Image 1 (cartoon, rainbow, N blue to C red):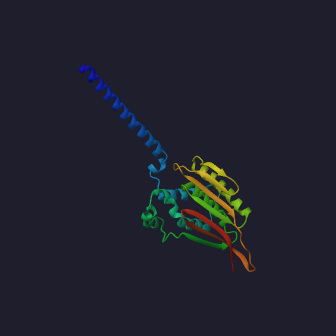
Image 2: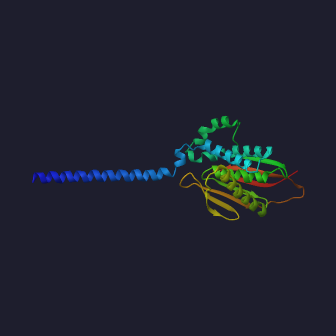
Length: 240
């Protein structure tokens, strides 16, 4: 009987080892599936690289026949300052604060204000510059939401069409596969980004009610306001 008990013990030991081995494989497989959704992050993607991607997207539009004017380049640089913290959303708590001094040094900035006011005469390219920047942000920044409020429905719809067009030009020029559009209508576009699960990028373009008074009109204003990790562009009219 003793050899029989020994054989049974050996069989139990083999089964236990096989079960433990299978459990380890299951855990490894689940971990691999989880980590694969953050493949780009594993490869070293961070706020600095995302900001560089945004700059590359804008430069791609320059090469695709939409060469920005001197003033449009200034607008975009100011917009980047205002939106800088958005690029660090996925880098963990405190990432932007830790990177702030280096961010100022690398970009030769003095500060990163959350609000930017642009006031120029008409026909200075503000509407197009906002469309270009929104497309570049959608291309480079994960889990972002950007809202644009324009003076009327016609302009808000034109802005959104331009954003979609510029985004397609960025894909084409940089030779990257386009993001999948999850939802699109006359007021919003949702795309699924490439930084894993939950990377939904949203642009809203809405008409707003602007009151006109007797001595108003001459300058169009764009205000960039960054609050709660979302971006808001406001367009309006100023008085003399």
